[in-house]
Length: 145
Image 1 (spheres, rainbow, N blue to C red):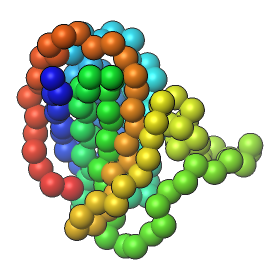
Image 2: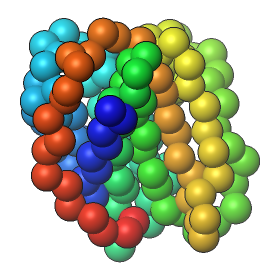
Image 3: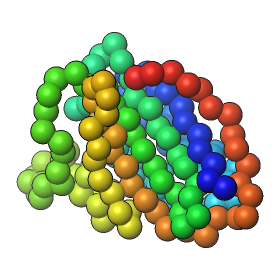
Image 4: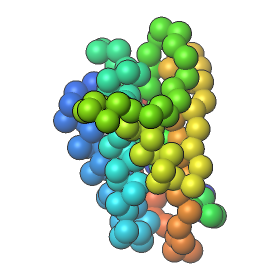
């Protein structure tokens, strides 16, 4: 260990479900069945990547890494425009959006945002969990976002 796998997703609303499904399959292949928190966070971060972080002609990448102390989830986006790095803010109680990073911060043991070169950012989160001694590596699709 560590083992990592990643998949690129197109800029389409259906990609959020596909990212969740990819995450579930990967974690189950690694011997983890209780994946609810990680699934919820990947869903929120993928939604944010589509809404705020990816141009229409570009998608986003989800990367999972089995680490000795848990699972690291990364969502890479590709927006060219210089924007401030996101920060979880207290959403308006009446708003229907704006809770993604608040949820990620609440469910992950650690999380952060890193600028990505040549453009975009990586929003990552870490979930402590006991992984089996030898997770099985699943196939990966490598494309740039």
